[in-house]
Amino acid sequence: MFFESEKFNISQIVSVVCYEPSLKKKDIYPGCLPTYELMYYTKGDTYITFNGHRIHMTAGDVLYLPKGILNADYYVDIVEKFALYNVYFDTDEQMPQAPVHIHGVTYELGNIYKKLYNEWLSKRDGYYYKSMQNFYRILELIKKHGQKYNTNAHFRQLAAAEEHISGNYYKTGFECEKLHELSGLSYTYFNKLFN
Image 1 (cartoon, rainbow, N blue to C red):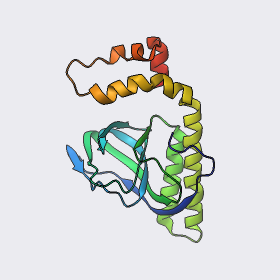
Image 2 (image 1 turned 90 degrees about the vertical axis):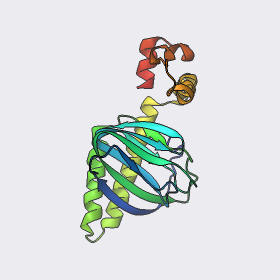
Image 3 (image 1 turned 60 degrees about the horizontal axis):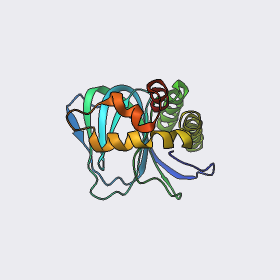
């Protein structure tokens, strides 16, 4: 999961942006990020490649990206025009060094990202504290979502299928329909856990 502990201290929110790029086939970004990123897709369909990880992002998805990965490839293949909120932040905590994709988080999360973005832009008295409060609320909702849908037991059951996907998705003849067999689960139950 994105973070394991209840004691997760954000040392600084550096910036909050709403990003809706012009439609191109591919956007390329610098790979060595100076801060951590936690983005929420409000619309669209893209494939993000970061340091060898290829992630399919659609509306309602959250993506964490680590900072400081030297020579990381980072680009976005755009399938459908997209928009997102992105929080650039720092922490003294040990953070994952690989991207973390969280699929289909609650609608409420999008509303809180919007509140955070609007508060950040306002620069009214106390805006930073309110922004930090909203960011912690985002982390709380992500944690709840992860506990509900991604227990450790579920991760263990899906590990073989995820490993197979990572190593073979680009090969001709790759069949998604057989992935449940690698986990020893029924097709229906595998789909429920995987989604």
